Length: 552
Image (cartoon, rainbow, N blue to C red; front, side):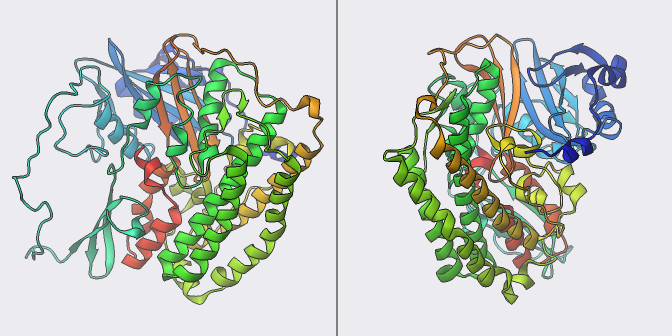
């Protein structure tokens, strides 16, 4: 969905020739990916090249960093976009030698590179010179080796530095040279939305420093996808990333990347079903976010939390009718969906319409219970402030970015599925605080309902002879060797992207997941410094993270 005015307001496209001139002789070679021009640069030119692309060409969104090892080199790929127009993309490829895998850090240019490069070091083994905090991020500091490096020995025993039976948590003590207090929040605490450990330093009651400690739920999802075939074995895994309600949105992220990689055209009818199912998942996800957030900020388990789960259950019933599963849907297929609407289809459509008809009154009820509540307003207004440029610097997307006035939504800005043919609006708020993020999600539920209603109208009137749910896809897919692609969709939490590199076989050589929760969580420190512990809990809840997607 893009109006002519919106198209005219997009930034002027930078041509490949202009990119070549901008990078100049710093480009050692070209390494084009299927969706973006690629330039190979020296490890010591990273900051200069990224700075020029950001400041002179407008590439202000470091969307993803993919690190990998080949037989003769290590490689970091910086996937760059524009918040104003994500269809403009460029990839900066940075090779380093096997003997000395050291590359210049991009963190001074893009703050989001902090966590990106820590993960690349942790799992692959690339050192980033000038990085402000070069620690592991998913694995313990005592871990020996890098699991995605080619010489990693899985049989090697790991060394634990703690003495046997010792308590790893330091007892309470007073440091005469410090007036601050160290406080552990999580990992086993309901307010951390999963197994998240937030190391917090307090000065009196004020937060002066926090360090989100992740990795407790790392499940090797990328590696499992690398061991599965494109056609059949990968699709069940995406449901398990953001596992609470967003399964079809996750499946679409993989489907979009793999379909573009294999040049598969999805039938129009199947695109409509995908769009409807994805928006049902978005509503279910936002309902869960609303209920748990209300629980976080004023402990209201009986009213808002239960009401939100009541409405989410109705959506889950509809999705179960459609897919046959309640959470782990496995409904998308490369080239379409597994099957058509359930029979009798009139009953399914009527059931879905009944939910949409009742939704406005339920949203009004939430507004009465939440947005007009004085306690809720005090806890959320002007807390967890995330300024627009800071949100961009951390790679934030979804309601977290749109709640800070960043008008960025891939459904509109990088159209896929059937979205550009439908009438709906992107919701943005200028509050930049916890309150704005909650309002953004609540109003997005109403926009999702508009999309579903239009999809139902189309599906109801679609000629029976033209209801093609799947393209004719070969049983075995083997994309060209060394073909590379990065594609993303607008998940419930933001930009959910997939990078795939093919080696000519029926399995990916590299499969990288760009998690919106991972990026949004990295901004928590910016949101909480100078505030109080209750504000930290509210800010964390407003990010709506799922640790299964953060850790992957």
